[in-house]
Image (cartoon, rainbow, N blue to C red; front, top):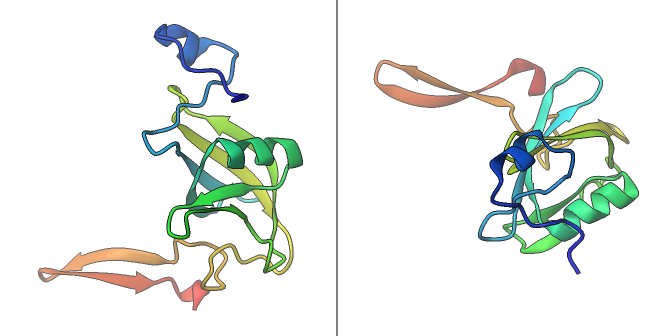
Length: 138
């Protein structure tokens, strides 16, 4: 049995009510934006299925669904950089989540060993679109 109730047709119940009714997409996933609880730095964007969300709520450690590997993934399980969840928020229609986390270990969240997966800026100049890495992350 799924622990998350289906969303009712009553939009007000979803937007203003007190019952958590995450709206998973057609693939059974919900987007999760992850920030550092200490300073608000954007660390990553991932996806969760119902099992990953359930495990996250039960354990307090962030779990995600890897679309590329098609498997459940406990963030930091191999690196030691586990994400302890401080707070979870949902948006107005409950189809996206915001996780505020504390990262254990030496702190990288990205598999490239950077603190954040968002280490490059998109720039447009002279008709060219390029990626520029932030100096602090090199």
